[in-house]
Length: 220
Ligand SMILES: N[C@@H](CCC(=O)N[C@@H](CS)C(=O)NCC(=O)O)C(=O)O
Image 1: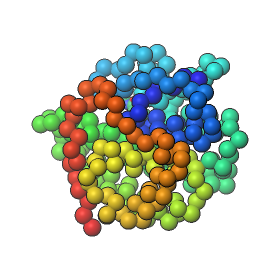
Image 2: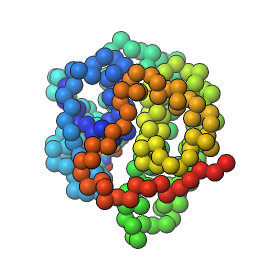
Image 3: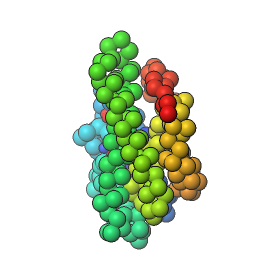
């Protein structure tokens, strides 16, 4: 299998966590693929994914799979790890996945908009901040359920969203403001598949030109 991959991408990390969980990490050739929303699409990615996004997985029988949701479901289906998306908790996990993935989308858009400097639209910036706070508030209110439920696809997505928040907004203070979620995150971060896939900035691409200092702070 071949995976369009980046050590910074929270969506790629979802796939990497599932690969670790099912023991297939070594079966995958990782291709460092630079995907930037506000730049011309990478032709190497476009060849496999017309949306120009990562992750995209090319399976051994030549299927090209995207996006992370489809790839994760495919990997779970070919493994014997039904517990990662159990029938009786399927909707619960898919909903958490929708929330985690949606939060990642918002955080990525927010950074892109801020990267426009003086041309950034204050209405868009404010809307993205409001949605970020709202999504995190829901996750805080559900942190007890996250803790109790067996580890699965929903957790994967939420932990990747929070990892991305830590990566790009490390000083925003969410852990002090959202103690239930922070406690769950600290526990899940010890899980081998989560620990082994921690986000790493390899410095590739023009990302350094975007101001990545936190633009918001949590207050209780
Ligand atoms: N819904 C997609 C989102 C993938 C995504 O947005 N990936 C980012 C990298 S983290 C990307 O490729 N961005 C480039 C672009 O949007 O053109 C998924 O779950 O895989």
